Image 1 (cartoon, rainbow, N blue to C red):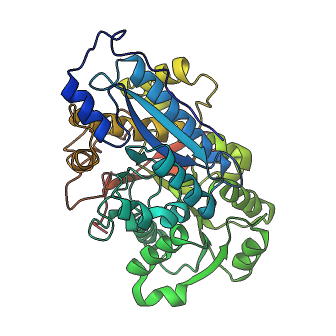
Image 2 (spheres, rainbow, N blue to C red; image 1 turned 90 degrees about the vertical axis):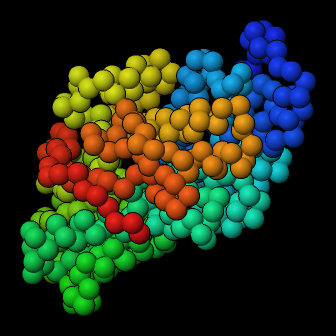
Image 3 (cartoon, rainbow, N blue to C red; image 1 turned 180 degrees about the vertical axis):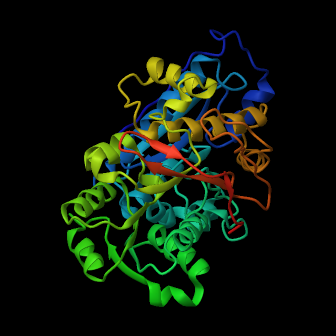
Length: 404
C-alpha cells in the first residue's frame, strides 16, 4: 500500500492568515481545510498489473513538487493513494475508505477500466468529482450517464479505428487476430475494429480473450496463429503485452503486429519482451516517448527530466508510465489553479470541464487539452509509431479522433 501525505505547514508559518469566514467555508467543503486539499487515488501497486504502479508514484512526486512551489491558494495537496491490486472489489473498498473516512474532495487518476467501472455509479451518486481517469474506455466520455466522471486520454474505440484503417491500407485481404482482455477495456477495441470493418468483421477477425488474473496467454497466441492470422492486434496490459511479443518471436510468427498504446512503455514492456523481438510493431501515442532522441532538446521533456531527477530519482526514465503520471497531474494542477480559492466539489467539476487549449509539456506537438460541459474527452488526437528495436519512431500525421 502506498499512502503519502504532504507535510503541511501552519497558516502562520506560511505567512498566510485567512479571515475567519474563509476558515468556516473551508470546513464546510469536503476534503478542504484552510491548509490542505485532499485528493484520493487507487492504483495497482501489487498484482498482475503492478507495472502501472509507477504512474501513482510519479503523481505523488508531482504533488510534492507542486506543494514545494507554494500549493494552491495557501493550501497544500494531500494525495492519498491506496493499492487496489487492479481488483474491482478492492477498488470499491478503497474508494469507500477515501470518500467516507478520508473525506477527500475528489478522486484523481484512478487507474483501470474494470476498477473504475466498479465505482463509477457509487461516486456519481455521492457527487464526488472523479477526475482524469487513467483509462481510455469510451464510457468515460459519457457526460450524461456519468456527469461527475471525466476521462483524459484518447479513447480505445478511436484508437482501434485508427488501427483498422491502417490494416486495410497495408493488408486489405488480411485475416486479423485480436488478443484482448475480457472486460470493457478489451471490448472497446473490438467495437472500434467493427466500426471500420463493418460487415467484413466477422469474416476477417478471429478473437481470443484472456482474464487479467491469468498466468499466461500462450494458448491464445497458439490459437490465433493456427487460425491463419497475418495481422495481430494485442490489447493487453504490460505483463501480457510483453508475453505476446515474446510468444510471437518464439513461434517464428510474422504477423503485422499492432499494440495498444497503454502498453508501449520501453522499460515495462519492450525491454522485458526482448527489444529485438518487437521490431516492426505498430502502435500509437499522444505522449512524447522518453527514449526518442528527437526530444533530447525539447523544453517540455527537459522540464520532465528535471522533475524526475529531483522528485522521483528512483523512477525509470525509460518508462512511459512516468510521462503519463506527469501529464495527468499537470492537467489537474491547471484545474486547481482555475479554481482560484473555491475548491468545492461543484467548482472542481466546473473547472475540470472548462479547459481550453491547455498546453502540456509531455503531449506531442499539436495536441492540446480541451473540455466542456459536453466534452469529457480531454485528449482526442494521436499519432502512429513503429518500434525500431531501440525506440518508437513516429510516422504520419497527428490524427483527430472521433467524438465517441
